[in-house]
Image (tube, rainbow, N blue to C red; front, side, top):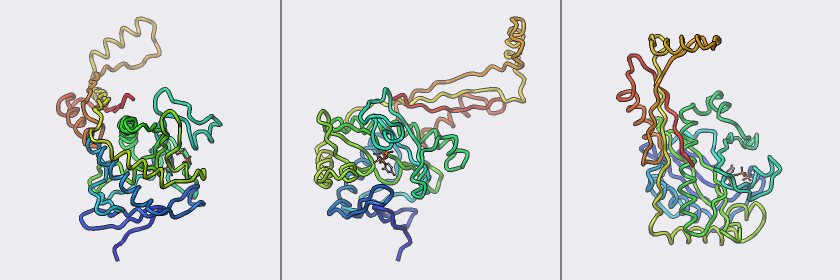
Amino acid sequence: MLAGYSGKAKNIEFIEDEKVKIIFRDSISAFDGVKLNELDNKGVINCKISTRLFQILHEYGLETHFISSSKDDEMICERVEIIPVETVCRNKTAGSFCRRYGVDQGIKFESPIIEYFLKNDDLHDPLVNKEVAVNMEWMNSEEAMLMEVITRAVNHILKEVFDLINLDLIDFKLEFGRNKDGCLLIADEISTDTMRLWVKKTGEIKDKDRYRKDLGKVIHHYEDILNRLNTINDLPNIETQTEANVNINLKSSVLDPAGAVTQRSLTRNQHETIETTRLGKNAKLIFSEFPSFSLLKEIKGISSEILSNPLIEDFEIELKYNL
Ligand code: UDP
């Protein structure tokens, strides 16, 4: 018997070479497992949707735990340590957002909203902010930055992909994990259980809300999503919006003559409360590549080897996804 564990809708088996086998069951649950059912063929459909969406993300260069699909209801993935904070990206208001803030469903955000939730059923997955999550060491600040930009990039891609098949991506949840080398990967599943999809114009619900709200024909609609995804032959050409701002500053132990000249000028102009002025430089790098752990590693290399002099300067990287 291989080691592993069972989640609410999937079984995880640890297999050789730092891999896991993820088996999608027919179970469906809502409200922290209070509502629970078995729906014929759900495991296969969700596994196929998840597989297709991971493959699509790979085609755009995003880094995920997905390796291959071994059977209709099984995926082989890299073994990761799951980060206990999940991201939710919202294009329109729905679900817990409406309940939390007392607002109507379906209001479009000017630009997508990212939220963080602690994965803890006993506490009903509370909303957390980055500062709390980093201070509690659920993730480090670099992971927090990457999780945000990667979630925005996934939203950009999936929105365009679903647009092709007449579906409006309302919101979705992502989980992340670290592999044995500390590389941050998109993990878990991406399926009709973890996103909201409405038919354009009519607003017909195609996702797990059919189950949560007892709207019926859950499997019929899940299958329809899979069929629509299978009609896509050519993926849309999506230009990335990945930007890195590298701020380079002299180390605090190094004298800054130019800063001192500016400081004297400020003092002469009656800005007496400014005690110290140090001047730095900024490099803005705009990439034709989607954000990933590997890209951040490359930017760190560029920053230390080309943009700065590590003997006298420090640098800070800020990654942005402008959508
Ligand atoms: N979601 C999820 N797992 C969770 C919580 C949320 O997959 O544990 C998905 C959910 O299906 C929706 C999005 O994340 O697509 C936002 O969910 P929301 O916060 O609105 O909570 P819900 O209404 O699902 O309770």
